Length: 168
Image (cartoon, rainbow, N blue to C red; front, side):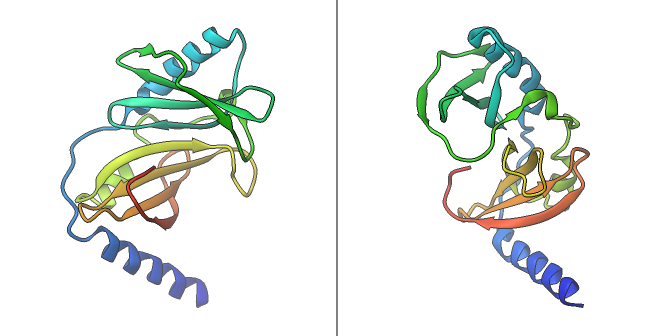
């Protein structure tokens, strides 16, 4: 009973946060992730570990582990890798891209359930509380509120988390 009430609260809160959203037909660059990972591997000369990979409507950001506790940020846009943009201390667990398995339309179910939302990003994150990687779709309302929707590799919705601000 408590779980049902919590789920209803999350759904109600999501509805409030996402109300007044603008429509977006933009797809996320999820299908570019494999090519982006391969490009980073080529630059680093090895199969890299990542802290996070995220696909926006226009590019893929990759945060590769340097083996010293830092993340190297790479940007893959228009089919090519830009030079590394920064190196910064990282937190959390890294993961191998070989551990990722998802459909390129993994965000479609979320988009169908919240059609008036603006798709901001699809992320693969190493910090999954149950081990392995975690998949998340970030949506935004035109009022600036954000909602992270956690999904499985097929796009099945697992849960949500209300975010604030404009970052992903």
